Amino acid sequence: MTTLTREISEMVDAPTEKTPVPTALWKRVLPLVVVAAGLALAYGMGWHEYFSLTFLAESRESLTAIVENNRWGALAGFTALYAVATAFSFPAASILSIFGGFLFGWFIAGLAVAIGATVGATAIFSVARSSVGVFLRDRMPARVRNLAEEFEKDAFGYLLVLRLAPVFPFAISNIAPALFNVPLRTYVAATFIGILPGVFAYTWLGQGVGSVIDAAEAAGREPSVAELVTPEITLAFVALAVVAVIPIVIKKLRARAR
Image (cartoon, rainbow, N blue to C red):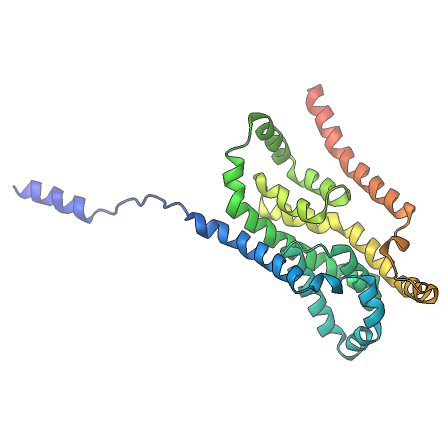
């Protein structure tokens, strides 16, 4: 009787293994809803109208004065704005980079843009991965799953190509890797390194935007970003993408040779 009592007591006192409780659907979807709502609010409030060379032409004196009065505070605010715009997938990456180059110079602005873009991209990547990434990955067709596994084998290299090649919009390049099992550290490193050439190219263009605005005002028309982008810069982006692909191709050829 004593033995039976002891066994029952041990069973009651023994720690029980807790079955992991799946995260509620609304908790996983809520971050995406917040992003979508923020994007809708931005368009509804007409904030997209501020991300244009026309606005820069109209406000360049006041913006320049703000930077002159508090350069580092303005730079911090600019970096935070870039991160928020990227996190909410607001299509303003190129124009903000040009703004930064005009206000802060190409090098300082380039560093600020790279930091802000990486922080914002990491935020939306984390949201997409935790909300729908696992759900969609588990329901991929076999062929897509095989491509995903191939991508995961050299995630850094493929992500670097995505960042260097201006083939896909920045927002899509931020979210698409969430469907694959890409480590956060790899995503952050590939994003920061991969966007540097494009970032510095656009901030460099920003240094010459003043002359474009002056020419447009003299001609009585609105300035255009197309006037800043030259065929040489486009070819440079393509060349960078080709260079980034070379190590991946060599790695595959060696694997087949073995």
